[in-house]
Image (cartoon, rainbow, N blue to C red; front, side, top):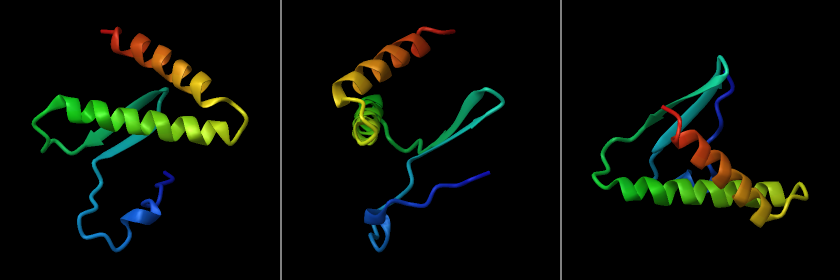
Length: 83
């Protein structure tokens, strides 16, 4: 297992907390998440932040942010339609 370190902004911030962890193994993904939020739309915001961060990371590799976000959206929509 290769855990990721916390982001730099989390160090020394007393309000920082981990809200989501995801592992890829056995050709699937398993997650743990903070269940204290009452409004599911807050998770929509988190997923949006994650998508934008990924788009910026892929832009550094030469893929446009628009193209990356489109691919993420297509895959997301296909995945949530599965039973």
